[in-house]
Length: 217
Image (tube, rainbow, N blue to C red):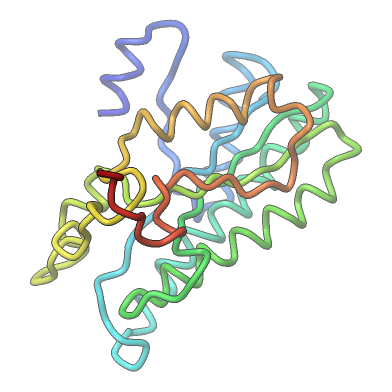
């Protein structure tokens, strides 16, 4: 799929294999991007995995380590890998993809929730450290978006999150779409957001607000 998309976009894109938990892969990806396009000026830390639902007591160490390694360590390594390139360019923008699960506890998903809370702290610290280099660092926190992470089970025998989520009580009574998130992402990476750094931007259709009142008669 990434190769197909890169081929469709032509010279504007290329696909590089990247295991976000690998320092060597990050170095190779940044080097390849620099050789093809010049210094890196935008990084979107979007890789993420969901843990199969289980209580903390029932969660095995391998699941915990895999979830934190991809969802947090991967973003840490990405920031570290692109920073020298962005400095050479005179600045840049980093956007870390979090989740509304970073604003509360969710039973049965402790590894994922812990990872998303950690992204908020990572974003704030990186924003302070990189500000004088002209590098802005923000986090985007989607609500429930209609992707495979929601519609497909996270493990054998598990039910997808979509089976447990009903958007009808909330202010925008539908699932989010990838386009909803993309539009916000384009804003954060554009000059229009030049005065934003260390910000947590929530795109959730009002999920965190709680149920909305019925429409007036």
